[in-house]
Length: 211
Image 1 (cartoon, rainbow, N blue to C red):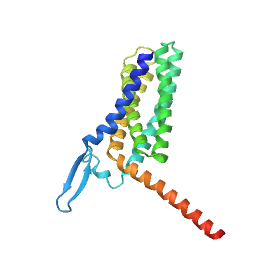
Image 2: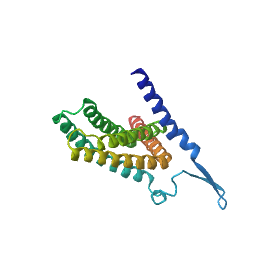
Image 3: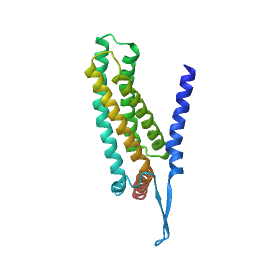
Image 4: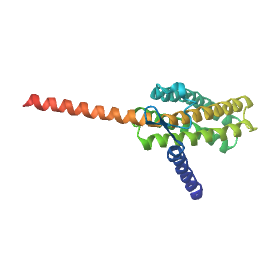
């Protein structure tokens, strides 16, 4: 148990490093000879070229798509738990389905809070690493439930197919977040500065009115 916990922690740190620090190493710096200004390009620049005009909206739409599939997949997972309990399947499969619901809902809440309210460099890197870890978990669940003989084959295949679909969607979202992570962090920081300056202006007006 201790070894498994230590391995999970080390794996999470490695995922964060690959997503956060490793991405910075992969970034390409291109110099515009006409303007003599440097523009930064990520490894997915050509893939997301059509979305470059609205980076924050692209990330929000990708996350909304992920949330929609998370809700559907959570409902299917609950049905799968009920199906496994009715046929007396192994406790491991039942716990895997229950844990899937908990992880998906937790990630949906955490990711929404980070994207909407707390877009810092660490939080965006943490979200990207977490999404990749959950995506790998979904891939393992898809393979496991596709080949299991316990429960209803229809319910197992549906669960496995949606798990694989969510694996692909999470990977696409992680790539989108990696491409536009700097824009998300900049806009999040600028909105906080605007709020602070607005509050300071209001307090200044109040103090002058009192005088």
